[in-house]
Each structure stands twice: as structure tokens, then as C-alpha cells.
Image (cartoon, rainbow, N blue to C red; front, top):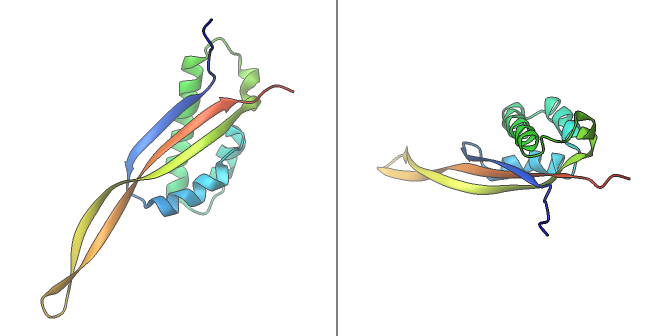
Length: 123
């Protein structure tokens, strides 16, 4: 017998923000219902990062609707963000000139994000 899984994922790679800054917002919406998480991102102070996460959550909802097309929209309050992984992507290395012919290395970090959506058990 085949066991059907409810987990759906979406990912974004190569985002030009450091993973440390991205994890601040990721920890804010982890384990929240998806519509509550979208509201939290709307009123967040970190606008650029919030827009990235909102884009990802809308993609996640779209993936859910494609995979589970038999469900009606009344099940939407049971969807929650199961897990968010923010990993470090590629790092661009640049040199900043300083006096006496030397240079300091500047590391411009990027992030990779993976979000998993699941359905809570109905009470």
C-alpha cells in the first residue's frame, strides 16, 4: 500500500543576503500557519528579506494547490510551515584597496532557502 505524503517544498537559491540576516526572519515564521506567516512578513521591519520570503511562500502555496488539487480552500487554516532551512550559498570575494598598496578581502555572501509546508492533523 502506497503512503501519500502531505509535505510540499519550495526553494530559492543565490539570494544576495547573508544567511545570518535571513535566519532572523526565518526563525520568526517557523512553525506558524502559512497565512499568519504572510501577515507577519507584511509588517516586518526588514522589507527586502520579507519580500523574498513572501515570494517563496506564495510559490509554496501554488505547489500545494498543484499537488493536492482535490482539497477545497476550507482546509487552508491547517497548513503550516514545517521547516525552513537557510544555508550559505556562493561567496563573492572582492578586494578593497587600503593605503600602502595593500588590500582587504570583502566577502559578499549569498543564501539558499528551502521551505517545507505540511498539513496539521485536524482536531
